[in-house]
Structure formats: structure tokens, C-alpha cells
Length: 391
Image 1 (tube, rainbow, N blue to C red):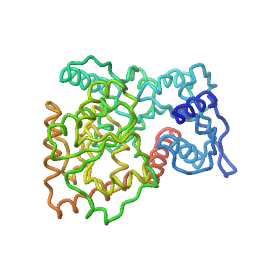
Image 2: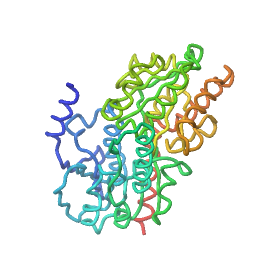
Image 3: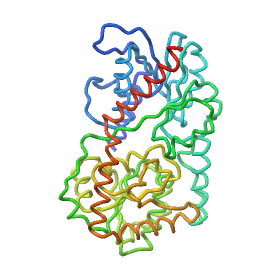
Image 4: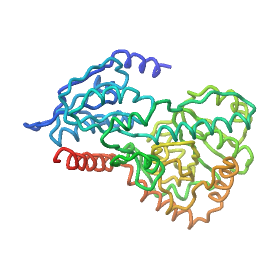
């Protein structure tokens, strides 16, 4: 409750525009406008402490742009009446969901700037379709009529027409990046950075139970596929799952709350901070993470538990490459059944096969560090500068 009040106070007092952000260098020949979130600038911008993926990324993007010779201005994603002057060489803005609904408005006012749509989620038209389908199937299975949550409503085709390039989260060949292929624009990519507070202890392999899973999710449990997890595990009392995440979607609990409450193998843990004592207790006992969402960019909740060596059992729409681990959820037609099949297969791994899967998980998770974010983002912005500013 106190956290919710604090967030509201922070949102009320956050500056809608922060300008002239520079580092320690003497010369800044260019100016960039970043359309993102400004609430973090109420705090200490020079403090690299990890608080939340987006908060850390905002300050890091500013530092990266500074290192490339840009003075940086930041406009908040909620600033409806901002009227930028055409003085920028580069404009990077949230554009892949309703949180970036003013992207086109500002892009069209900056004819001199290179306009880069920052896509931190899958192509919105496709994502909206997949989310609607997921809710329709949920309502059909449960004889309910819940409205969709987290369905993009923006006209991304018009956003793309106002852009020079797309900067997309995720690897080429994975769901999010590939979802933008229909837009005939140059595409660049970057990878998200997870908390540096997460650790993996090799001894955990021996303490883990092959029948125990964790479902680590964010807002919107239904579009995150937590409903599929509950329904699948309710049919398999020999397996168990710990669901971690906020209780922000009341409809989910209205429909499935009693199933969870009356179950002896499905446990709702509430919000669990990464790297916390509770997080490590779960990492010590749970062998696998299970996630079957409708549409994600790169699911940082899954990447986070991968860093702790928890083996992912996920679908293609999670946006994470699990080809080497070979425990993905296959097929989308009967999604509860495909979730069941995946958890049964995972729980049957031998000790040696499980140990091999953990090592492959740790290797794959190294793509999702703060350093990988900094390196991939700076590399792509540098390529954009080479491709546009020097021509």
C-alpha cells in the first residue's frame, strides 16, 4: 500500500521535461531528445544502483548518448502538450505500446532529426491480435467475460511512417525482432539488462526438486499466460508451481483465485524482489521456470531467473532463445495441453540432463546483463549514426 502511494506521489511530482543532461566530457556537437520516463530524475542520476529495469536503462541510455557526443533532453511519456523545437539531431522514443502514444506527435515536429522508434515490445498490431485471442480463449474456457489488459491500441503503421529506423529489443531470429519484419525500415537491436544482484550458486543444483517450478511474472497475469500455468498444474498434483508477481489484474483472481486457494500444489507468493532472500529460497528449491505468454518483447522476468540458473520452459513468444536447452513449449492451438506436455517433459529429466540444462541456461543468461544492454544499445546507436548522420 505504501509503495502504491509513493508511486503516485512520484508520478505527481515528476518533471515532464529534463534538459541539458551531460557527462564529464568537454565537447557535445549533437543534441538528442529521448521520449521515455522522467520520474527517475527526481532521484540521483549518478547512482547506478539497480532499482527497476526501465529506471536503470533510462540513465544508462543518457550516459551512452553523452559518450557519443550528444547533449540529452528527456521528455516524459505522459507529456501530452510538449512542443519540441526542431533543434535535435536524434530523436529516440518509446513507440511499441500505449505508453509511447505521443511518439508520432513529437516525431512529426522534428523534421531535422533522425527519428528512431524504440520498440521494447513486439509489433503492436500483432501483439494486440495475440492478446485478444488469448483473452477470448480464457473467457471461453472459464465461461467468463473479462476485458483485455495490456492490449496495444496505437496505430503503429502511422508511427513507422514517421520513423527513419526501428530500434528493437531482442535478438534477430527471435519473436520480437521478427515481428517487425513487415515494416520496410532499417532495424537495429539491443538486449535488456537484468539486475546485477541476482546470483547463482552451483550447490543449488543438488538442492532443487525436479517437480518444482516457478512462474515469475509482471502486470497482467492473463496476457502473461499465468492462467495457462494454473490450469495445467491443477491437473498435475504431482508437480508444484510458485507464482510470483503483483495482484494487479483482479479479474484473474476473480476467476482462478479459488482454484489457487484450494490447491495443494499451486502457491501464490505475491511480488518477490529479484535477489531477495525469498527469491533465493525459491531459486534453491525450484528447478524450472514456466512461462507461456501471449506476446512479449524479451521477458526480463524469465531472463532474471535464468541468471539464477533456473531452467526456462517457455514459448516462442517469450522472446528468449531456448533452442540449446530444448525444453520449450511447443504449439499454440491447445495451450493448456502444450503447457502440460512441457512441464511433464521437464520434470522427467535425469540429474545429468538437468545439470547440463542448468549450465546451458547460465551461458544463455549472460546475454541479459547490464553490460550486454550497454554494449548492444551503444553499438546500435553508433550504427544508426554511421548510417544516417554521416550520409
